[in-house]
Image (cartoon, rainbow, N blue to C red; front, top):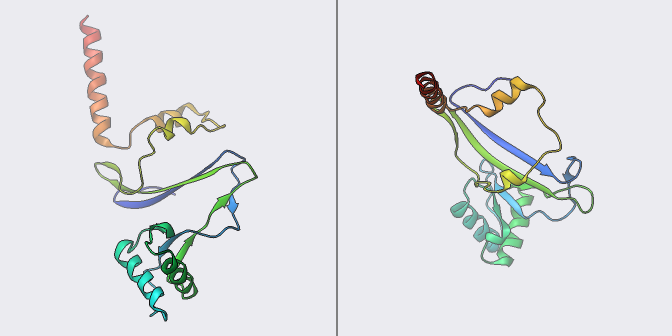
Length: 171
């Protein structure tokens, strides 16, 4: 498999404090996404109100049922919409008791000017806190991972290194 310029990828990162073998929990789903390819006129007024709100506020993005203002509308509308395959469920993941599972999804574009993250929240301090029990051993792979995918940053880094070498030679 090879990445190429002008392609779009969805990156799905799942981390756990356990063995890393997460599975779907049996608890009720609360995160959904509108299946935009499916159409059906729902029977109840509350279900139509629900799907109308979903179409307006979350046309193609995942949403949580908590975001729907009227709880009864959300319950009735969600169950009817699921029956007619108007919603895609995002399952709750679990591991062994006492272990935590976290999932992050984001979309990246591979552009000639570099990689651009277009969806997903910034991870902030979590990037520093999330440590793996495994490490990369291959020195060549470590260099590749440390390098930037952005050609502009690589050029800046090379010119900066060249300037530093010139200073060292001059002194």
